[in-house]
Image (tube, rainbow, N blue to C red):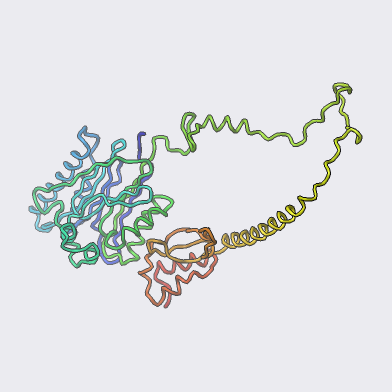
Length: 410
């Protein structure tokens, strides 16, 4: 099936500890990109802008997508390098660049640096690119563990970028897309602040890519916002992705839409009060009431069934009582809310009561994750906030907003 881009979003934010934003991004289908500049005196801002400008005039050149992306990145590298060596104020500047191009059902990626590309498929998040950084090289060679890499003091040192050298090696990849796939390109201002599990949880829970982009930036800032934060998202869908099956499309159970319509026509309700039937000797249009003497005699009662009837009645009474209890609990679960954490450790608003019935029936459901990691809440407040106290929706939302703004008193 032919695929197309059905949704897209992009955000960039200065963060909480930087004075300027040296990130840039491209949101120009079929091209998407994220650049993270480096260098003093706004040189990083210049480098990232020069890298993303390389997509302005690009069209379908007839080249294979990987070849085209590699050329764009190498051309950007050459321009940035030439400016850096000719202008003292831009000496040493450079930028990462992670870019994607969608061609039919394929997504091709060109990558230099430690910005990243991810794919969310069927709820599972997969990192598609390899970081060109000192710590990533140490981890890949087995010299340090993944846990050590996450907190390594030199994790910001990159080993490959656009600009520092006259030539650059570009990593390229091509993947076959699937309907529903969501792709994320981001700078390390996101991935250095929140984990992949937290990113996946936000993407799974968001109702739209715009909502997801806002939530990702907010979560990175709530975890410290130590760097500029940039995210670009796009989702693939079918060429006619409007949610309604066509006449020849198959749906659940291998039925076509026409089959469903035919079945609906056959399923007309029967008349519960059919017209009376005339007796043999009556005029054709006469309605006759059957006299009592011609009616069938009622069957004699069968005494042996009474005990079974009483047992059944008792069972039905017990079931009715249980149904009443469960119904009452369900009604209550529709009216109250509580604040807890989800599997990724994010502070989350839940609707319902924090209990589970036998057979795994949960009396609560997730409304939305705030994007704020529970570990970011000071320990003295955490237990009080995440106590699963029953609240109105307004109270629960106000509590989460106070947490996000850092206004909750100790």
